[in-house]
Length: 78
Image (cartoon, rainbow, N blue to C red; front, side, top):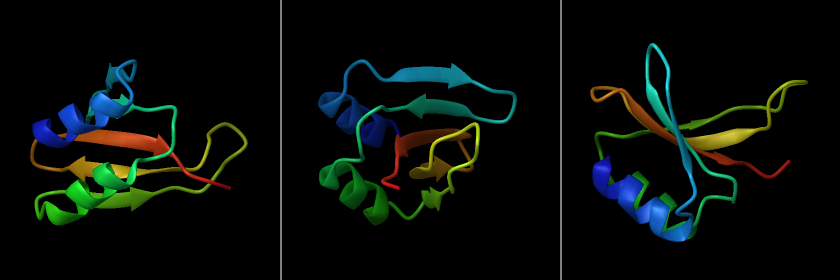
């Protein structure tokens, strides 16, 4: 996951990282670059996720490393 985070931050260096009780999450403001999507999909230890829009949250997509408890999250098109 650290390589994927490094790749993602090359596209968006200002990404924010937040520590939650269950996971450390990197939040990106731009849509997921194809290079990040391809690299994340190729890594078997990562799980892809997608969420629907709610009244309080944007629709997101990203990857989670369940063992390391680290995630990256991008806005998803409506």
